[in-house]
Amino acid sequence: MFSKDQFIEDCKAAVGEGQKAIREVVLAAVAEPSGIVAELGEPGMAGVFPLYQSESLTVINFVWAPYMTLLPHNHNMFAVIGIYGGREDNVFWRLLKDPGGPALEAAGAQSMGVGQATTMGPDIIHSVSNPIRKLTPAIHVYGGDFFNPPKPRSQWDHETLVQEPWDMNNTHKVFRQAGQRFAAGLAAGAED
Image (cartoon, rainbow, N blue to C red; front, side, top):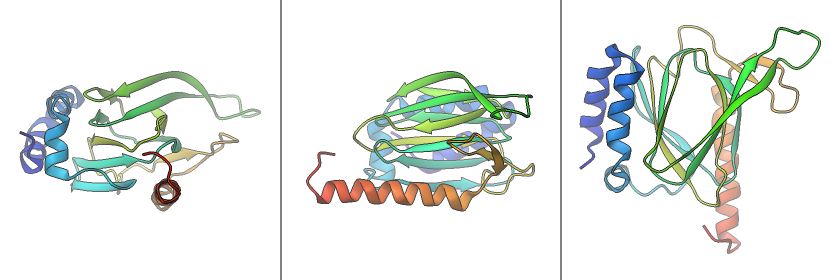
């Protein structure tokens, strides 16, 4: 059965071995999604819910609202993402050197469902969306301090793909607004 405290201890023990070792810990956890729900609770709203944070490791329970999308961004640290409900689509982006056009171009994509995990190296740029009509919860484990990264992070405007400094306040705002749309849909009688 999943235990948040044990999961964090397992991640702390594995982080020094890198993202491959963390991926094994995450895969073991999301293989039994009902255990995560029993420990963390049934997701009821979109949000960024930190479970652990240090200089070398951050563990976050992300809950994506239906149809929400987060703009392209980087982490400047490795990441492992495991899905324990719903679906998550990632678009991976490549930096372009031509200053006359967009700063990025799409370079690939991955769709994940319950029980699946993906790893991302520190240089990966991705955008995330929840393509379905229900909340998508996922455990994210980062090889560093996600909220106070030692190297400044970037995000790229959805429309223009112009690079700008990463803004965690904007990320919280996106989740809050998506959560409000989800709650309004439930109140209006939409199916969850």
